[in-house]
Image 1: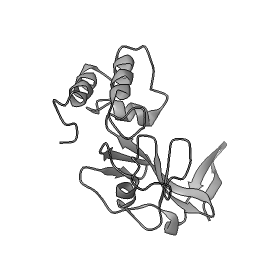
Image 2: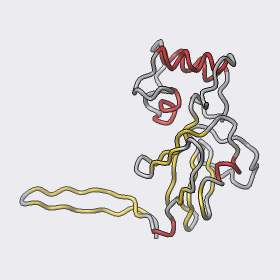
Image 3: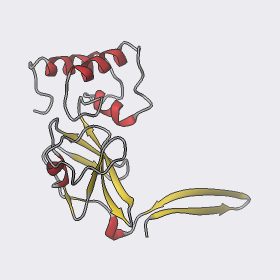
Length: 173
């Protein structure tokens, strides 16, 4: 059964406790694969997802019974399979009504999580670059904004998003 477990480790006089996620083998996400998409089961992240990817397309990346949850935690799997998945959405296996294993979706350039790269994303990245807003506390938004994957939101990220938004480049090719 999925859930949390406490592990206690003793070494001489030192005692440490850890809380870990317990995921039955049958409830683990089984990634099939997709062009340019990376699934990191340790970081629990699905990166390289293209803008305008639908719920149905995201579900097809995994084998077995999986569900898509939006940024509010609402299961949207059966509501509209043609809706876009965005940064911060989760694809997950569900056991006994609870999320057993999951991966957070990162759409490069989609900072606000609507599944598209639009003016709102461009403005958020510009403001993050100018340090007038911080997105560091939201790791998936930061990962979406850091398009060159150098660990910073810098001028290169800003210009790539700007040029993608203006139709001068395609971030996904």
